[in-house]
Image 1 (cartoon, helix red, strand yellow):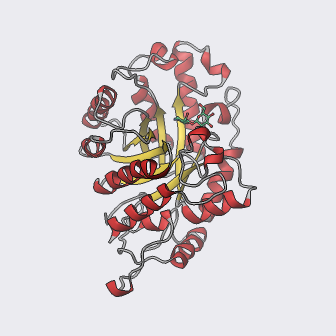
Image 2 (cartoon, rainbow, N blue to C red; image 1 turned 90 degrees about the horizontal axis):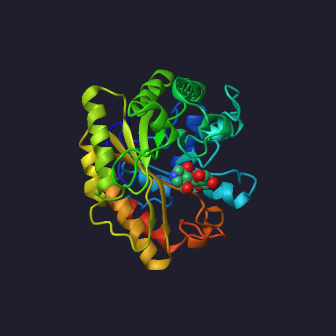
Image 3 (cartoon, rainbow, N blue to C red; image 1 turned 60 degrees about the horizontal axis):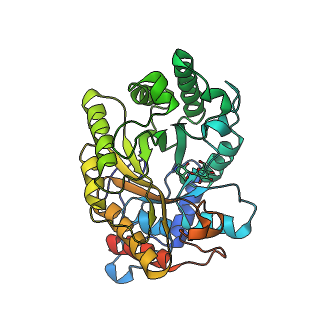
Length: 356
Ligand code: 9MR
């Protein structure tokens, strides 16, 4: 991929020409405002005899113009956590700090402290930033849960306007709406759906577009990792939005998987969405399991994204197994002692082989 990915900053990327120092230097340039949000700087072509495989996930993904990110929780104080985060990942997303309950605990009273901290951290290091999540049926503050009718509509619009407005120009991709479909492809019967009817999702996207015109606006969900009834329902919505000019730019596939996952239609599913003209992103990847079986699922997911031109990035849902929401299933790329797991090697090799 050579254009307009992973962010809105067009760049061309040579294959396997980055070194760790190039990536580090690009972070400095980004901090100086030279390369705003660009995780890596374009590198000069080099002779194939001098080509080196990239040594970190972020640098390896950047060879094809993609980001490789992680969800971040509040563990910056831990040296190994921050060291691993900073070294390996070219993109971040707040695991919880930008959700509705965290950002607007009382009506129209906003708390941006956790989100601001992450955004500052990422900007200083030239990392891509995903925003998660403006509207979701879960993690709503108590005051939202009882609202009805137009009162809820106004609360939703105000929340999106204020949060997306606060971060306008800083977020590369926003999860505007999260998890709004059922397994059978129908709309989830959330308070939003029941009170506002089918129009609430496009209302949310239009409001976000006004608040932050430059961010890529995404619909994000789980259980959509195959061609199935749920992904069919979302596909129909995205197709309709594109046909009617509703501002949707990307679809996030959370990809909370297990090592026994059947991924036979994973790539085709990404591709059919991409063919609607949206970017697709793997947004919350984790794979319960261990060893070669786990590594194999990670490899297939990375290869699928690499095979789809509009798949512009992969995010894993945490840095270390220790702090994973699925900790007992050891689903991430680094173990509790921040050692690289077999899955790490599989992902790195896949990213490097796609580049070379
Ligand atoms: O990982 C998040 C965990 O710390 C929170 O307690 C939980 C609350 O619902 O949300 C988790 O993240 C979810 C994400 O925001 C949306 N997709 C599913 C993720 C795992 O539950």
